Amino acid sequence: QVQLVESGGGLVQPGGSLRLSCAASGSIFSINDMGWYRQVPGKEREWVASITRIGTTTLTDAVKGRFTISRDNAKKTVYLQMNGLKPEDTAVYYCNGDVRSTALISHNYWGQGTQVTVSS
Image (cartoon, rainbow, N blue to C red; front, top):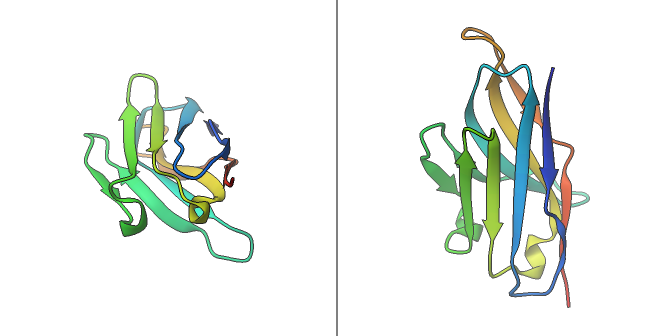
């Protein structure tokens, strides 16, 4: 069984910063792509950023220049550094990971989500 656990959400003023973390635990052989998504009530979950095992990153246009995704493979953790936060960044942020439990078996997992609220 694999778990992804997010942390670091909270309330921040516009222009502020937060750093989200997502730690993977359980029966893990390796972790391939990891990413962050976000969702607001009444809307579909949207992709925010992804990072490959070797560190290649992609981000949605809305957060480029403000957010940075990174990972620590030894700690099985992915991070999302969010700077210059705007009210429209308010959402529940979810971690996603493509996890191999063996060399041949891979599944996609989601974390439980962490609330980010940007408000004055």
